[in-house]
Image 1 (spheres, helix red, strand yellow):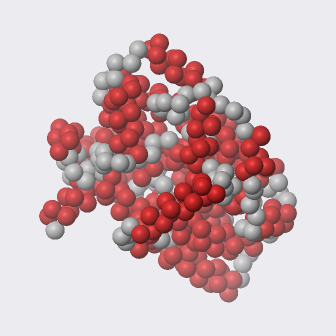
Image 2: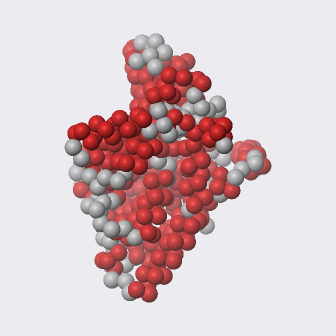
Image 3: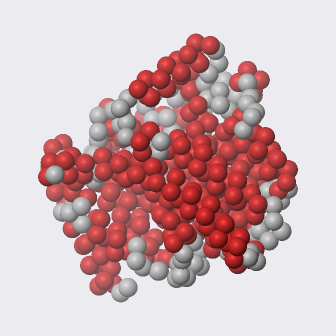
Length: 429
Protein backbone atom coordinates (compact mmCIF):
# COMPACT_ATOMS: atom_id res chain seq x y z
CA UNK A 1 0.00 0.00 0.00
CA UNK A 2 1.59 3.29 -1.15
CA UNK A 3 1.13 6.72 0.46
CA UNK A 4 -1.72 7.65 -1.88
CA UNK A 5 -3.66 4.52 -0.93
CA UNK A 6 -2.99 5.23 2.76
CA UNK A 7 -4.36 8.74 2.28
CA UNK A 8 -7.53 7.40 0.65
CA UNK A 9 -7.95 4.88 3.47
CA UNK A 10 -7.59 7.63 6.10
CA UNK A 11 -10.25 9.62 4.23
CA UNK A 12 -12.47 6.54 4.11
CA UNK A 13 -12.11 6.21 7.89
CA UNK A 14 -13.78 9.61 8.26
CA UNK A 15 -16.43 8.92 5.62
CA UNK A 16 -17.30 5.51 7.05
CA UNK A 17 -15.20 4.07 9.90
CA UNK A 18 -16.92 0.71 9.41
CA UNK A 19 -15.92 0.48 5.74
CA UNK A 20 -12.44 1.66 6.66
CA UNK A 21 -12.18 -1.15 9.21
CA UNK A 22 -13.28 -3.77 6.70
CA UNK A 23 -10.81 -2.43 4.13
CA UNK A 24 -7.67 -2.33 6.27
CA UNK A 25 -8.37 -5.75 7.81
CA UNK A 26 -7.77 -7.23 4.36
CA UNK A 27 -4.12 -6.16 4.55
CA UNK A 28 -1.40 -8.70 5.34
CA UNK A 29 1.13 -6.02 6.29
CA UNK A 30 1.80 -5.71 10.03
CA UNK A 31 2.70 -2.00 9.87
CA UNK A 32 -0.50 -1.18 7.98
CA UNK A 33 -2.62 -3.20 10.40
CA UNK A 34 -0.99 -1.55 13.41
CA UNK A 35 -1.26 2.02 12.10
CA UNK A 36 -4.87 1.76 10.99
CA UNK A 37 -5.82 -0.33 14.02
CA UNK A 38 -4.67 2.51 16.29
CA UNK A 39 -6.25 5.11 14.00
CA UNK A 40 -9.59 3.27 13.95
CA UNK A 41 -9.71 3.01 17.75
CA UNK A 42 -8.95 6.73 18.01
CA UNK A 43 -11.75 7.62 15.59
CA UNK A 44 -14.09 5.28 17.48
CA UNK A 45 -13.17 7.09 20.71
CA UNK A 46 -14.31 10.37 19.14
CA UNK A 47 -17.65 8.69 18.33
CA UNK A 48 -18.29 7.41 21.85
CA UNK A 49 -21.84 7.90 23.17
CA UNK A 50 -21.99 8.92 26.83
CA UNK A 51 -24.97 6.88 27.96
CA UNK A 52 -26.30 7.90 31.41
CA UNK A 53 -24.96 5.62 34.14
CA UNK A 54 -22.17 4.12 32.02
CA UNK A 55 -18.54 4.02 33.13
CA UNK A 56 -17.66 6.34 30.27
CA UNK A 57 -20.22 8.92 31.36
CA UNK A 58 -18.86 8.74 34.91
CA UNK A 59 -15.32 9.34 33.64
CA UNK A 60 -16.53 12.32 31.58
CA UNK A 61 -18.26 13.85 34.60
CA UNK A 62 -15.08 13.34 36.60
CA UNK A 63 -13.03 15.10 33.93
CA UNK A 64 -15.47 18.03 33.81
CA UNK A 65 -15.88 18.46 37.56
CA UNK A 66 -12.33 17.75 38.69
CA UNK A 67 -9.99 18.67 35.83
CA UNK A 68 -11.36 21.70 33.99
CA UNK A 69 -8.88 24.53 34.70
CA UNK A 70 -6.87 22.33 37.09
CA UNK A 71 -3.45 23.82 37.77
CA UNK A 72 -0.30 21.81 37.17
CA UNK A 73 0.52 22.09 40.88
CA UNK A 74 -2.76 20.46 41.87
CA UNK A 75 -2.23 17.81 39.19
CA UNK A 76 1.19 16.91 40.64
CA UNK A 77 -0.22 16.84 44.18
CA UNK A 78 -2.97 14.41 43.20
CA UNK A 79 -0.46 12.41 41.17
CA UNK A 80 1.59 11.93 44.34
CA UNK A 81 -1.50 10.87 46.32
CA UNK A 82 -2.27 8.24 43.67
CA UNK A 83 1.33 7.07 43.66
CA UNK A 84 1.26 6.56 47.45
CA UNK A 85 -2.24 4.97 47.36
CA UNK A 86 -3.73 7.72 49.52
CA UNK A 87 -6.17 9.23 47.04
CA UNK A 88 -9.85 8.82 47.98
CA UNK A 89 -11.44 11.16 45.42
CA UNK A 90 -11.17 11.87 41.71
CA UNK A 91 -9.37 9.45 39.40
CA UNK A 92 -8.41 6.12 40.96
CA UNK A 93 -5.40 5.44 38.74
CA UNK A 94 -2.51 7.50 37.39
CA UNK A 95 -3.49 6.68 33.79
CA UNK A 96 -7.00 8.14 34.01
CA UNK A 97 -5.63 11.05 36.06
CA UNK A 98 -3.19 11.93 33.26
CA UNK A 99 -5.54 11.65 30.27
CA UNK A 100 -8.26 13.54 32.16
CA UNK A 101 -5.84 16.37 32.90
CA UNK A 102 -4.55 16.53 29.32
CA UNK A 103 -8.08 16.40 27.85
CA UNK A 104 -9.95 18.73 30.20
CA UNK A 105 -7.27 21.10 31.48
CA UNK A 106 -4.71 21.40 28.67
CA UNK A 107 -7.06 21.06 25.67
CA UNK A 108 -10.27 22.16 27.40
CA UNK A 109 -12.19 19.32 25.71
CA UNK A 110 -13.02 16.65 28.33
CA UNK A 111 -14.51 14.35 25.67
CA UNK A 112 -10.98 13.78 24.40
CA UNK A 113 -10.50 11.27 27.23
CA UNK A 114 -12.00 8.59 25.01
CA UNK A 115 -9.93 9.62 21.99
CA UNK A 116 -6.71 9.23 23.98
CA UNK A 117 -8.04 6.08 25.63
CA UNK A 118 -8.96 4.69 22.21
CA UNK A 119 -5.52 5.38 20.74
CA UNK A 120 -3.71 3.67 23.61
CA UNK A 121 -6.15 0.74 23.71
CA UNK A 122 -5.90 0.42 19.93
CA UNK A 123 -2.11 0.27 20.05
CA UNK A 124 -1.85 -2.49 22.64
CA UNK A 125 -4.81 -4.44 21.27
CA UNK A 126 -3.36 -4.37 17.75
CA UNK A 127 0.13 -5.27 18.96
CA UNK A 128 -1.27 -8.17 21.00
CA UNK A 129 -3.29 -9.64 18.14
CA UNK A 130 -0.33 -9.32 15.76
CA UNK A 131 1.90 -11.00 18.34
CA UNK A 132 -0.49 -13.95 18.60
CA UNK A 133 -0.63 -14.27 14.80
CA UNK A 134 3.09 -13.52 14.36
CA UNK A 135 4.47 -14.63 10.97
CA UNK A 136 1.13 -16.26 10.12
CA UNK A 137 -0.79 -13.40 8.52
CA UNK A 138 -0.42 -14.73 4.99
CA UNK A 139 -1.04 -18.45 5.54
CA UNK A 140 -4.33 -20.07 4.62
CA UNK A 141 -6.49 -20.48 7.72
CA UNK A 142 -9.10 -23.13 8.46
CA UNK A 143 -12.68 -22.13 9.23
CA UNK A 144 -12.16 -23.23 12.85
CA UNK A 145 -9.09 -21.02 13.21
CA UNK A 146 -10.94 -18.08 11.63
CA UNK A 147 -13.75 -18.63 14.14
CA UNK A 148 -11.30 -18.45 17.05
CA UNK A 149 -9.69 -15.30 15.65
CA UNK A 150 -13.10 -13.62 15.34
CA UNK A 151 -13.84 -14.48 18.98
CA UNK A 152 -10.47 -12.97 19.96
CA UNK A 153 -11.18 -9.78 17.99
CA UNK A 154 -14.54 -9.38 19.75
CA UNK A 155 -13.40 -10.25 23.27
CA UNK A 156 -13.00 -7.07 25.36
CA UNK A 157 -11.65 -5.18 22.35
CA UNK A 158 -13.32 -1.95 21.23
CA UNK A 159 -15.89 -2.28 24.02
CA UNK A 160 -13.05 -2.01 26.54
CA UNK A 161 -12.97 1.70 25.80
CA UNK A 162 -16.04 2.23 27.99
CA UNK A 163 -14.28 1.47 31.27
CA UNK A 164 -11.00 3.03 29.97
CA UNK A 165 -8.77 1.44 32.63
CA UNK A 166 -9.37 -2.23 33.45
CA UNK A 167 -9.47 -3.83 30.03
CA UNK A 168 -6.93 -1.49 28.46
CA UNK A 169 -4.71 -2.70 31.30
CA UNK A 170 -5.50 -6.28 30.29
CA UNK A 171 -4.19 -5.78 26.74
CA UNK A 172 -1.13 -3.89 28.05
CA UNK A 173 -0.45 -6.69 30.52
CA UNK A 174 -0.93 -9.40 27.89
CA UNK A 175 1.34 -7.71 25.36
CA UNK A 176 4.05 -6.98 27.93
CA UNK A 177 4.13 -10.46 29.46
CA UNK A 178 3.84 -12.39 26.19
CA UNK A 179 6.50 -10.22 24.52
CA UNK A 180 8.90 -10.70 27.42
CA UNK A 181 8.26 -14.45 27.53
CA UNK A 182 9.05 -14.83 23.83
CA UNK A 183 11.97 -12.39 23.54
CA UNK A 184 13.35 -11.97 27.10
CA UNK A 185 13.93 -8.29 26.27
CA UNK A 186 13.83 -6.25 29.48
CA UNK A 187 12.05 -3.31 27.83
CA UNK A 188 8.83 -5.33 27.96
CA UNK A 189 9.02 -5.39 31.75
CA UNK A 190 8.28 -1.65 31.60
CA UNK A 191 5.19 -2.46 29.52
CA UNK A 192 4.06 -4.83 32.28
CA UNK A 193 4.64 -2.06 34.84
CA UNK A 194 2.61 0.29 32.66
CA UNK A 195 -0.40 -2.02 33.12
CA UNK A 196 -0.22 -1.17 36.84
CA UNK A 197 -0.23 2.53 35.94
CA UNK A 198 -3.35 1.94 33.84
CA UNK A 199 -5.11 0.03 36.63
CA UNK A 200 -3.53 -0.62 40.00
CA UNK A 201 -5.22 -4.02 40.39
CA UNK A 202 -2.59 -5.50 38.05
CA UNK A 203 -0.28 -5.59 41.07
CA UNK A 204 -2.56 -8.37 42.31
CA UNK A 205 -2.73 -10.02 38.87
CA UNK A 206 1.07 -10.26 38.86
CA UNK A 207 1.06 -12.61 41.87
CA UNK A 208 -0.64 -15.63 40.25
CA UNK A 209 0.94 -14.81 36.90
CA UNK A 210 4.50 -14.96 38.26
CA UNK A 211 3.72 -18.18 40.13
CA UNK A 212 2.39 -19.79 36.96
CA UNK A 213 5.33 -18.45 34.94
CA UNK A 214 7.92 -20.06 37.22
CA UNK A 215 6.01 -23.37 37.25
CA UNK A 216 5.09 -23.33 33.55
CA UNK A 217 7.30 -26.34 32.72
CA UNK A 218 5.91 -28.43 35.57
CA UNK A 219 2.85 -29.12 33.52
CA UNK A 220 1.42 -32.01 35.55
CA UNK A 221 1.67 -30.12 38.86
CA UNK A 222 0.12 -26.99 37.38
CA UNK A 223 -2.65 -29.01 35.74
CA UNK A 224 -3.46 -30.76 39.01
CA UNK A 225 -3.63 -27.47 40.92
CA UNK A 226 -5.80 -25.94 38.19
CA UNK A 227 -8.31 -28.78 38.42
CA UNK A 228 -8.32 -28.74 42.23
CA UNK A 229 -8.82 -24.95 42.34
CA UNK A 230 -12.42 -25.33 41.17
CA UNK A 231 -13.18 -26.79 44.60
CA UNK A 232 -10.99 -24.46 46.68
CA UNK A 233 -11.38 -20.95 48.07
CA UNK A 234 -9.50 -18.63 50.42
CA UNK A 235 -10.90 -16.84 53.45
CA UNK A 236 -10.25 -13.11 53.29
CA UNK A 237 -9.45 -12.98 57.01
CA UNK A 238 -6.47 -15.28 56.44
CA UNK A 239 -4.77 -12.82 54.07
CA UNK A 240 -6.08 -9.43 55.24
CA UNK A 241 -2.94 -8.82 57.36
CA UNK A 242 -0.81 -9.00 54.20
CA UNK A 243 -2.61 -6.04 52.59
CA UNK A 244 -1.11 -2.56 53.14
CA UNK A 245 -3.31 -0.18 55.14
CA UNK A 246 -3.92 2.84 52.92
CA UNK A 247 -7.05 4.94 52.48
CA UNK A 248 -7.45 3.92 48.81
CA UNK A 249 -7.11 0.18 49.46
CA UNK A 250 -9.45 0.31 52.46
CA UNK A 251 -12.15 2.06 50.41
CA UNK A 252 -11.80 -0.57 47.65
CA UNK A 253 -11.98 -3.35 50.23
CA UNK A 254 -15.21 -2.06 51.73
CA UNK A 255 -16.81 -1.88 48.27
CA UNK A 256 -15.62 -5.15 46.71
CA UNK A 257 -14.76 -7.71 49.41
CA UNK A 258 -17.09 -10.03 51.32
CA UNK A 259 -15.88 -9.93 54.92
CA UNK A 260 -19.15 -10.54 56.79
CA UNK A 261 -22.62 -12.03 56.48
CA UNK A 262 -23.97 -8.54 55.74
CA UNK A 263 -21.56 -8.20 52.81
CA UNK A 264 -22.58 -11.62 51.49
CA UNK A 265 -26.24 -10.63 51.73
CA UNK A 266 -25.58 -7.33 49.94
CA UNK A 267 -23.80 -9.06 47.03
CA UNK A 268 -26.53 -11.72 46.84
CA UNK A 269 -29.26 -9.08 46.67
CA UNK A 270 -27.34 -7.24 43.96
CA UNK A 271 -27.10 -10.43 41.90
CA UNK A 272 -30.78 -11.18 42.44
CA UNK A 273 -31.81 -7.71 41.25
CA UNK A 274 -29.65 -8.11 38.17
CA UNK A 275 -31.15 -11.52 37.35
CA UNK A 276 -34.67 -10.10 37.48
CA UNK A 277 -33.93 -7.50 34.81
CA UNK A 278 -35.46 -8.40 31.45
CA UNK A 279 -32.44 -9.42 29.37
CA UNK A 280 -31.81 -10.98 25.97
CA UNK A 281 -30.25 -14.43 26.11
CA UNK A 282 -26.92 -13.11 24.83
CA UNK A 283 -26.83 -10.50 27.60
CA UNK A 284 -27.80 -13.00 30.28
CA UNK A 285 -25.51 -15.79 29.08
CA UNK A 286 -22.85 -13.79 27.24
CA UNK A 287 -19.78 -12.97 29.27
CA UNK A 288 -20.55 -14.88 32.47
CA UNK A 289 -21.34 -18.16 30.72
CA UNK A 290 -18.37 -17.69 28.39
CA UNK A 291 -15.87 -17.27 31.24
CA UNK A 292 -17.35 -19.79 33.67
CA UNK A 293 -18.05 -22.66 31.30
CA UNK A 294 -17.07 -22.15 27.65
CA UNK A 295 -13.44 -21.08 28.20
CA UNK A 296 -13.04 -23.68 30.95
CA UNK A 297 -14.24 -26.33 28.50
CA UNK A 298 -11.72 -25.08 25.94
CA UNK A 299 -8.94 -25.30 28.53
CA UNK A 300 -9.83 -28.94 29.23
CA UNK A 301 -9.36 -29.72 25.53
CA UNK A 302 -6.01 -27.93 25.46
CA UNK A 303 -4.77 -29.66 28.64
CA UNK A 304 -4.07 -32.84 26.66
CA UNK A 305 -1.58 -30.89 24.54
CA UNK A 306 -0.22 -28.79 27.41
CA UNK A 307 1.22 -31.92 29.03
CA UNK A 308 2.55 -33.14 25.69
CA UNK A 309 6.29 -33.10 24.96
CA UNK A 310 5.49 -31.48 21.60
CA UNK A 311 4.17 -28.28 23.19
CA UNK A 312 6.36 -25.29 22.32
CA UNK A 313 7.37 -22.51 24.71
CA UNK A 314 4.74 -20.05 23.46
CA UNK A 315 1.85 -22.46 23.94
CA UNK A 316 3.28 -23.56 27.27
CA UNK A 317 3.48 -19.94 28.47
CA UNK A 318 -0.02 -18.99 27.34
CA UNK A 319 -1.66 -22.06 28.86
CA UNK A 320 0.28 -21.84 32.13
CA UNK A 321 -0.61 -18.16 32.48
CA UNK A 322 -4.28 -18.71 31.75
CA UNK A 323 -4.52 -21.67 34.13
CA UNK A 324 -2.65 -19.82 36.87
CA UNK A 325 -4.94 -16.81 36.61
CA UNK A 326 -8.07 -18.98 36.55
CA UNK A 327 -6.85 -20.92 39.58
CA UNK A 328 -6.33 -17.67 41.48
CA UNK A 329 -9.77 -16.38 40.48
CA UNK A 330 -11.27 -19.56 41.94
CA UNK A 331 -9.44 -18.92 45.22
CA UNK A 332 -10.52 -15.27 45.64
CA UNK A 333 -14.29 -15.62 45.31
CA UNK A 334 -14.57 -13.54 48.51
CA UNK A 335 -14.27 -10.63 46.05
CA UNK A 336 -16.64 -11.28 43.11
CA UNK A 337 -15.27 -8.26 41.24
CA UNK A 338 -11.63 -9.35 41.57
CA UNK A 339 -12.42 -12.98 40.80
CA UNK A 340 -14.41 -12.06 37.69
CA UNK A 341 -11.77 -9.70 36.36
CA UNK A 342 -8.90 -12.13 36.83
CA UNK A 343 -10.84 -14.95 35.15
CA UNK A 344 -11.45 -12.61 32.19
CA UNK A 345 -7.71 -11.99 31.87
CA UNK A 346 -7.08 -15.73 32.17
CA UNK A 347 -9.64 -16.34 29.42
CA UNK A 348 -7.63 -14.12 27.06
CA UNK A 349 -4.47 -16.19 27.61
CA UNK A 350 -6.33 -19.48 27.07
CA UNK A 351 -8.01 -18.18 23.91
CA UNK A 352 -4.63 -17.02 22.60
CA UNK A 353 -3.21 -20.46 23.44
CA UNK A 354 -5.92 -22.13 21.34
CA UNK A 355 -5.12 -19.94 18.34
CA UNK A 356 -1.38 -20.53 18.68
CA UNK A 357 -2.02 -24.26 19.01
CA UNK A 358 -3.92 -24.39 15.71
CA UNK A 359 -1.18 -22.38 14.01
CA UNK A 360 1.40 -24.96 15.14
CA UNK A 361 -0.76 -28.09 15.08
CA UNK A 362 1.62 -29.85 12.67
CA UNK A 363 4.14 -30.12 15.51
CA UNK A 364 1.90 -32.61 17.32
CA UNK A 365 1.76 -35.23 14.54
CA UNK A 366 -1.95 -35.90 15.11
CA UNK A 367 -3.79 -38.54 13.12
CA UNK A 368 -6.71 -37.49 10.91
CA UNK A 369 -9.08 -39.14 13.38
CA UNK A 370 -7.72 -37.07 16.27
CA UNK A 371 -7.83 -33.88 14.20
CA UNK A 372 -11.49 -34.49 13.36
CA UNK A 373 -12.27 -35.12 17.02
CA UNK A 374 -10.37 -31.97 18.00
CA UNK A 375 -12.21 -29.88 15.41
CA UNK A 376 -15.56 -31.12 16.72
CA UNK A 377 -14.61 -29.95 20.20
CA UNK A 378 -13.45 -26.56 18.93
CA UNK A 379 -16.59 -26.12 16.82
CA UNK A 380 -18.68 -26.74 19.96
CA UNK A 381 -16.60 -24.06 21.69
CA UNK A 382 -17.23 -21.60 18.85
CA UNK A 383 -20.99 -22.29 18.84
CA UNK A 384 -21.27 -21.75 22.59
CA UNK A 385 -19.23 -18.55 22.23
CA UNK A 386 -21.87 -16.99 19.96
CA UNK A 387 -23.81 -15.40 22.89
CA UNK A 388 -20.62 -13.63 24.00
CA UNK A 389 -19.99 -12.33 20.47
CA UNK A 390 -23.60 -11.13 20.19
CA UNK A 391 -23.28 -9.47 23.59
CA UNK A 392 -20.18 -7.58 22.45
CA UNK A 393 -21.92 -6.49 19.24
CA UNK A 394 -24.97 -5.28 21.18
CA UNK A 395 -22.62 -3.42 23.51
CA UNK A 396 -20.86 -1.69 20.62
CA UNK A 397 -24.04 -0.56 18.85
CA UNK A 398 -25.13 1.12 22.08
CA UNK A 399 -21.69 2.62 22.73
CA UNK A 400 -20.89 4.10 19.32
CA UNK A 401 -22.52 6.93 17.41
CA UNK A 402 -24.77 6.10 14.46
CA UNK A 403 -22.30 8.09 12.38
CA UNK A 404 -19.73 5.35 12.90
CA UNK A 405 -21.46 3.83 9.89
CA UNK A 406 -21.28 6.88 7.65
CA UNK A 407 -20.15 10.54 7.82
CA UNK A 408 -18.33 10.37 11.17
CA UNK A 409 -17.62 14.15 11.41
CA UNK A 410 -21.34 14.85 11.87
CA UNK A 411 -21.07 13.27 15.33
CA UNK A 412 -18.43 15.81 16.36
CA UNK A 413 -20.62 18.80 15.50
CA UNK A 414 -24.03 17.75 16.83
CA UNK A 415 -22.69 17.15 20.36
CA UNK A 416 -25.28 16.11 22.93
CA UNK A 417 -27.91 15.44 20.25
CA UNK A 418 -25.83 12.55 18.89
CA UNK A 419 -27.39 9.09 19.07
CA UNK A 420 -26.16 5.50 19.06
CA UNK A 421 -26.19 2.98 16.22
CA UNK A 422 -28.96 1.13 18.04
CA UNK A 423 -31.13 4.24 18.33
CA UNK A 424 -30.49 5.12 14.70
CA UNK A 425 -31.44 1.67 13.43
CA UNK A 426 -34.53 1.74 15.65
CA UNK A 427 -35.55 5.06 14.10
CA UNK A 428 -35.18 3.86 10.52
CA UNK A 429 -36.48 0.32 10.98
